[in-house]
Length: 146
Image (cartoon, rainbow, N blue to C red; front, side, top):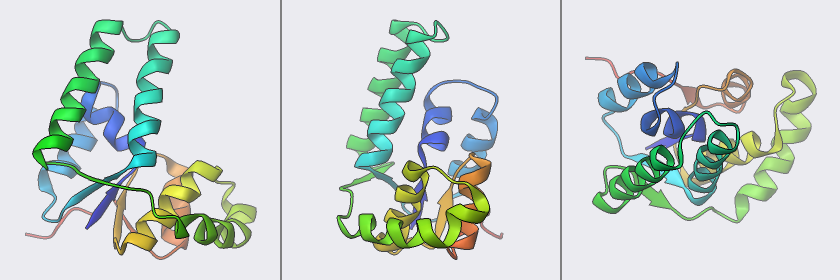
C-alpha cells in the first residue's frame, strides 16, 4: 500500500509545477493508492485556497473536485477513514522527529496514518514531510523497480 499525501493528490488534479512528478509516481505504482479522509479534506481546502488567492477559478476547482471524487468512487484511489490511533502515533513522532526536522502537525498525522494503516511507502512533494517520513521508517517517493 502507498499512502498519498495531499501535496501529491493536489498536483494530480490541478496542473502545477509538481504535476508531472505526481503523475509519474502514481502511474508507476504497483500497489494500492490510499487517500485518507484527512488527505481528502486537506486537498479540498488547498483547492479552495487557490480560488481565494485567485490562482484557480471556481470552475477549475469544481472540475478538480469532480475528478478526485470520481477516482475515489471508481477505486483508482482507495479512500480510507482516518485511524484514531494515528493521533497517539503522531504525538510520539512529534517528540522524536519535529525537533530536528521542523515538520508540521498535519504532516505528522499523515505519516502516523500511513504507519497505522500498514503502508510501507508514502508519496509526498513536501520536503520536510519527506524527511520526517524517512525518519519514521517509511519509504518515500520510490518508484517500483522493473
